[in-house]
Amino acid sequence: MFNSPVSRHFRSNAANSNSSTASRQQSFPLKKSNFKSALERIKIPDRFFSGINVFKVGSNGKLEAASLTLSQDRFIISILPRATPRQSNGSSSGSLLRPSVLRNRIKSAGSTGGDSVDGGASDAGSIVSYNQVSDRVDIGSIDRIQSGLNTLRFEMARQKEKKMTMSPRNSSGIPLLDESKSFSLIFRGAKTLDLMMDEGGDREEILYVLTSIIRQYGLAKLKVGNEVLLLRYVWNDVDRDNSNTINEKEMGELLNRINFLVKEKNHGAVYQKFCKTLALDKANRRNGLTFEQCVTLLHKTKRDTWQVKPVTQLFFDMFGQFMNNNKVRKKVSANSFLTRFLQTVQGEKTKTIEDVRNIFDKLQGLELADVADLVSEKDYISLDHFEAYLLSRDNDIFDPLREKYCRSDMNRPLSEYWINSSHNTYLTGDQLTSRSSVEMYIKALYRGCRCLELDIWDGGKDEYGTPIPIVYHGHTMTSKILFEDIIKSFEVFLMLHPKTYPLILSLENHCSIPYQQVMVAQLKSILGKKLYEPDEASLSGPLPTPSQLRGMVVLKGRRPEGATDDYDTDDDAAADDMTDQQSMRTERSSNTVSPTVLSRRC
Image (tube, rainbow, N blue to C red; front, side):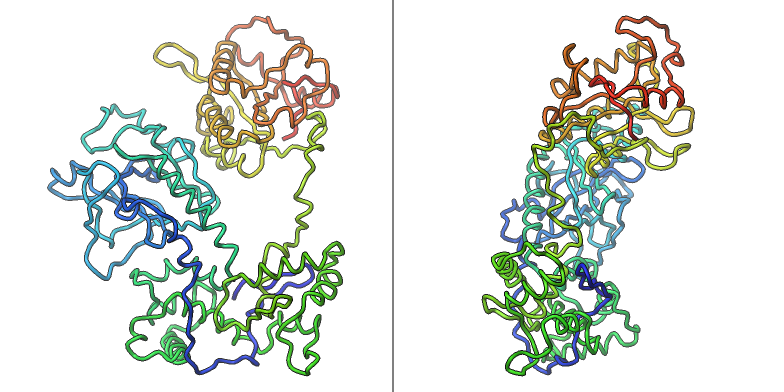
């Protein structure tokens, strides 16, 4: 039903309830949720609410005219389709461009949204009505924002653009791709929302505003209990009419989203029963439940589901069911929490009373449901606070001390470390027919990989006869991407993370000499001083340390046996290929390797 309390010695699919604290027939003076309004304090230009003109990359790589808007509470980014100048003024059909990802349908209870759009060209057309399909991204689901064209959809858009003969602005009002105006929202782990600013738009302003909101959200998220956070995640999906309340019809979907299954015919009864508990009159019942009232509903639903919830039993087992005054235990002292729980049950022998007081201060600052039996005494916490601790990062099953490292440990030669590595990094799927993508390198980097593989082959030549090195899984039907685009993505990553430990590029080089020369030129021109180039003295000594190579790119590869820097070959790429047997022999051959010829571990 709900995420259950998790301690290092206790796991259960528990709902949070106890029959001893049954529903009370009274009116609850619910206070306004601080978390729901946490982002409203951020000052944002009005054009973010009325709409900023952008172009969105669809699933087929086609650019579509759209408008980026923020909800008033700053929690939702919406991408609404809009008409281009040609469509709004000269098109007889009045057709509108439609987005093609997420496909969340917004139902409007009022009139259509024909507001003017600010932040871009003023004559770029109006936003379509709210009953059109819209892309909606929750601020809480965004993992990161990245600039440029380094996603799969942008790659598809570039390929589509190359196949078309386009003027700087074609008859549909769609411009050419511009890296300086493009950015992507990466959310829910792998999904992307890829956008490009329209004329007159300021990409850096959008990136600054969205980054500020995401940062503030991360801070506010640490100060709320699970009911509040859970409801925030589902609120905008359930509140279909954007009324900021949940009516009787929407109640069923809310319960389903939290995995509390109630037969459809009983939705109305559940709604009316809870409204009666809150002592709401008929008019307020028709208006619907507010966010704060729904938080109370979630807490009561959890509380009233179990006769004795597992976390309560755990609480009583450790601290005793009755206090010294023979009353049922509702709180626990800092000293008991330390000696009976942290040190005895959890085995955290190094914890002190000061650590416990810091934990208690954090727990008492959480925004929990108003009906929770909370304790405000300085050196005590309630059962609800205890449950919140079990679900918090402070009680993570992984020891946080293990995540720390000593910087002095990073001063050994690079060959003495285990390195998080990726094989066939560029592939989005299988090794025979899947698509290759620059986006996969960015994903690997953000997942912690620092050794990435590039299988490089001779491509074609451009209109000037310059060789074009490409990356793909050779002798298969996987798609091909440019070596140059991959290197550009590394340069962008290093610009954002200048202190990262070295990026090691495992080059499986199948290119002939002319193509290798182009590769060298591209590496030097794009990376510049970020490219590690060993001097003669370093070739005979130990490898440099991770600390010495921070913010740099290191090349890892092999030369054909007996090759020197001045060897001469023709275009026979096969002469440079190495068999798997040769690779294995080279792997075992020597413990002393030059900085540009590191042992391969993929």
